[in-house]
Image (cartoon, rainbow, N blue to C red; front, side):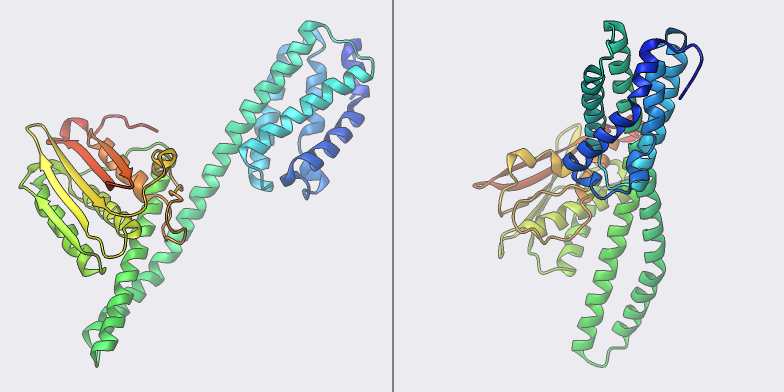
Amino acid sequence: MTEVGLSPSSQAMLALRDQVIEAWCRLARGTLGKAGDLPEPILLNTLPTFYERLARLLTEQYYHAGGVDVAVIAQEHGGERARLSGYDTTTLIREYQLFRQVLFKMLHQGGVVLTHEQREAIATSIDSAIRESVTAFALIQSALREQFIAALTHDLRTPLSTVSVAAQVLESKAPNEEVRKLAERIVANAQRIEAMTRDLLDCMVFEVGERLPLHIEEFDLALLAYEVAQQTMDHSNARVQIEFESVVGHWCRASLQRALENLMGNAIKYSAPGTPILLKVSSNELRVQLTVHNEGDPIPPEELESIFQVYRRARHGKCTKDGWGVGLPYARRVAESHGGSIIVTSTEAEGTTFMIDVPMDARPFSNAPVAP
């Protein structure tokens, strides 16, 4: 880039552009595994333009405009990395750090002497570029994930509905008990896929920070727990013990039902063979507790929080458990949307217990913010 009015420092930095970029490419390919196989145009991306804008920062009259240019270029870089590479945010940050390392080293070797202010201007701009790139990267990845999930769930629902209806017809007209049981299994598994699809759609809500839509009504939570327990036993071989008292209050029935179903499903997956699942409803004057307990391998203490993160599941026990990793995050959001919380305890001696604790009347909390 040749431009009238550039300072000697800017011109000296520009003269080293090709050498710096070539050295950075070698280092990136050798250090960042996900950069090794990228075609050169994709690896370079906006780097040459980014380099030129950094060089302009060494000329005083271009400083402010150059800073704006750097931010815009960094946003584009982050978006393209999300769309065109297998990068994660750690790799994205690391490539900027490698670029800074190579840049200052080669400027020094090339005899380009920078004042403290000039060095700070470049370092600050690279830090700003990292922030802008990571933000753009996260936004693009989130949008791509939402598009994928929306397309997936839309494409699943039509054939899933056809399978479910056909299985129900087959079940009603089964010529013998064996065929009827097979039809029942098809219906049950179709319902499981439908529930998992709903979980994915709700997960999209979590990702963009939106609230769960709640329909608050008055009902007896004990009756809801009893229904969930019966459905669990009807659709699995689980043995469920129920302890409850009548508790009438104001909550969203549909969301609490799904949250409880998720906790029951989680308990079945990880319970020790032959042990029962305990479902309990208790209350005091102001709050009610829904408790699901199972025996089995404890959740490692370091994972007690991560299991509530979207797409994450605990690694304890068998690793072949099915699911999207959104059931427990959903249960937490339901509790929080009701003005409550979910608590988990898990030890070898006592087993694993999940407790949803919510106020008796959730109406004042239905529009309150929830944790991200």
